Each structure stands twice: as C-alpha cells, then as structure tokens.
Length: 435
Image (cartoon, rainbow, N blue to C red; front, side, top):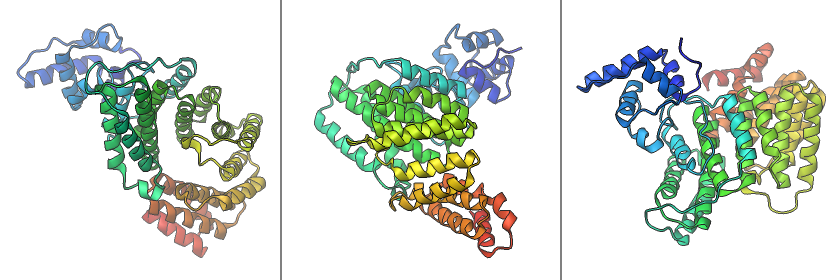
C-alpha cells in the first residue's frame, strides 16, 4: 500500500488516481516515446516521495511529461515546487521568495491547482509568527539596480494597486507583467539591502492585490498562491504588519470557503505580532467572523470589543493595505457576527447602519454589504426590501466583474424562492438564473 500523502509528488500522483507502480510505468512509457530507457520503479518513486532522494534532471523531465507539465517550470520553480496540484505551502526562508512568486505567476490560470491544506496554512502561520526574517543580501550577479528605477517601479505599482475595483478588472495583464518584472529583478539583479527591501515590499503589495482580484474571480487556488507569495516577500522585507495583513487575507479566504477553524488559528498567530491599531482592529474583526461561524459567542464578543477599541484609538496614518478599514466595516461585520449567533434584530440594525456609511467609491464592498443586508431583510421576512438590496448588489457585482459577489446573491436564491410570486423577488430570481 502507498504511504499516506506527505509529499507533493504523492499528491500529484493521487490526483490522477495512480499508484506508485503506475506512476513508474507512466515514466517508463514517456521515456520509450522519447527513444530512451528509464529504470524508474516503485522503489524509486517511494524514495522521492519520502525525501530519501531527489530525482535528477532527466527523471524530472520524464515526470513532467507524465504529468503534462511545462518543462520550463522545472528550472524556474525547482523540485518539488513545479509539481501540479501541490497543497503544501513553500516554507519561509532566505531563498523562498522567488520560487513562491514564480509559482503564483505560472499557475494563475490553472484551475486544477488546489487551495492549500488547512494544516499547511496553520503551519505557515506559526512559522511566520515565530521566525524572524534573515537580513537581505545582494544577488551575486547581474546589473546593479539604482534607486531611480525603484522609484519608477514603486510609482507604477502604487497606481496599479490603488485603482478602484471597477477599473482594476481591466488591469490583470498589467499587474502580472509588473509583478514578473519585480520578480526578475529580485532573482537576477545586484542590489543593496535597502533597495532589496523596497523590491520585496513592492512584490508583496502587488501579489496581495492580484490575490484579491483572483479571489473575486472565484479562482481560489491562484488567489491562495498569490497571498502565499506575498507573505514570503513581506517576511523577507521585514514588514511584520504587512505580513500579518496577508495572513489575515488567507484567513478571510478560509472563512469564505467554510473553514472557520483554520481561519481562527491563522488569525490568532497573526494578531499577536501586529502593531498598528487599524491593522489590529481589522484582524480582530476577521477573527470575530471566524469565531461567530464556529458558534464561539463569548470569544466573538471579545474580539468585536477589541476591534472597536483599536479602531477608536487610531491616530497616525494606517498602512496602505488596511487604510480602507472604517466604522462602516466594523458595523456590518459585527452585524454578520450577530446574525451567525442568532441575534437577528440587532444584526439587521447594524448591517443597515454600516451599509449607509460606506463611501460610494468602495463598490465591491458595497456589493458585499448589500448582499448581507438582503440576507438580513430575508431573516426578518421583508421580502421586497431584501429583493431590492440583492438586486443592487447583483448590478454592482456584474458592473465591476466580481463573480464572488454574484455568488453571494445566488446563494440567497433558495430563501428568496419562499417568496415566489412577489414581483420584485420574481424579477431578481430571473436575473440570478441569467447571471
């Protein structure tokens, strides 16, 4: 019997339903097709999957053929990071940033890639919380990067990452190209420690932005890998608050994918190392959401109180990645927590108050909030108002190109069907079916 899945090679093999002997046969078959002979057998596969040996370059090429993977990934990502379907995060380390970035860039459209396993994410969070980043050292070869080039790269990156959601849906190729440029410079250029820190920080911000875009598109595997790459970059740069924010993004995704226990464990590691009050408020609010989903009412209320207290004491400028955090977010997410805990009347009040305070420019968040408001109206039996809020949410989601927000409205359809025959509800259900 094959060993339990502990290695990316075993995971890729199991995805295709192959045993170790079957994978060995696949490798020998592709070798024959190339006019070659291969001595790969079950025992050799076992040694690779148990880290007793690393396949040589020829064997990796044959494995790539067997898995139908682009052979260029072998040199770009290295073993075993190029293998498909890998659900284990690359460990943090001095040489981990470039493989993590290249993995994200090369897997952005491959929907067969899975999200990271819960154990992998929790382990990564613990590693991030307990390991201090090593000092950056300059690359050994390549041309020196001057500060004027970095100024230009940062200015371009800021323009791209600060676009409103409605515009950002059209910049996917630009963001990927800019991140590729930064990754190439980190990998192959010569730079001082301050320049290296700026490059890694920029890579973290770009990867974080791309991750949110992929998340909104429903590409959860790709989103997780971009957040993972962003975490490596932030860790190398030494920016603890940014790293904590990225960990909280991964936790938000876990909550969204109905894994609140994973989210809570990640956030408990992240919040212990974060400093800015606004950032702390955001992480405690997200922690409260995961605790509410778990039914942990007392812990949820404690987290909500902490989030409110931290947001109230904010004085200096918050980091860019959480500068949007406001009282509106606190009210709506607090309402969602109370709704999960069964306090529907108070939840309905808070969600309505928060949605009314949200700035018009935050269209994606407004779409999310309106879907929450629709759900809140449904729970108190206000079908017309629920349909109006859901219709606004759907209209916004389609305008900004956010399938994730469309899905929020679609998930309400079973509850809306209870009110079939109400004109506004019937119109909404017709739009949902067409979306």
